Image (cartoon, rainbow, N blue to C red; front, side, top):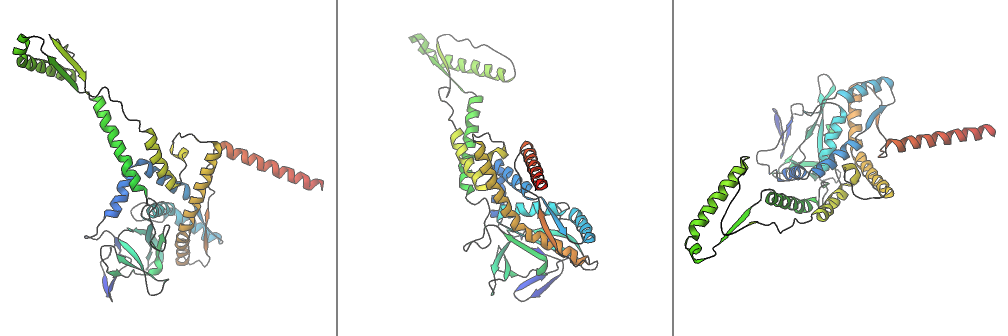
Length: 377
């Protein structure tokens, strides 16, 4: 819910003071969805690692303006603009915005403006699970409702807001999380990990079966007492072993000692775990070698996987480019500059340094040959 100190009634909805707005969950909001995705990333570390790789590989950009004075001011703004309580810099905002977009399938934020000083004082992100975007009377108009109710709210200064969806469709115009389809696989994977832990508890903390068999009629008469004595001595010996004291166990008669479950072998979980991880990683389009997974793959296959990841990262860049441009243009307008700004992205290259150096060498050799040919002609 968007909450502020100053409230005014506007028809069926409520408008709030933008300058004093604070984002937080409504008391009656069912936060199952947000907790579900956050818990999923916490339980499966490889998913969280994939998110980190995507965010770091995507966000390499610079805001560029045609005016030199405006460019210097724009660079300073990009380095120092406050981003809620998460830090400062436009890069920090882009990381948080993209991470939110990937996790929940939508991201919502606002450019905070100081009206008295006529300048951008920061960027704030809202919890996207609190709001639900709905289409207005005009198909191009978008309004928001609280997820916990059907009450529609009016966002103040709509020109200062930005809203992005991931993979929207006719049935899901709000977008869907990149984790869609992963929960079923993660449930099976966590069950396998739990069983592995239980098996190692069994193997590491060995249980024994001590069996005493009376051999004669006289032994049978005192079988109960002897069994009780054997149990006491065995318990004392095991307790001493836990304290670092070694004691031998001596028994008379037919006494057999076996390890419970020693004949059962651990189930080989390498193949099912790998199959599940392959499904998850393919959903996120991350090549296994970027995660430190030593899966057998050819050089050509690794190159193709890198190309697929590059296309995915370019798609994410296309989604957040309008948001970054809007923030940069808003700053320039308030700072008194009439020029526009564009977003220039760094090259996405997943090759190693040796391949980059070889490519530069080939380009230099090709340029030298072209110059020689031009000189001869």
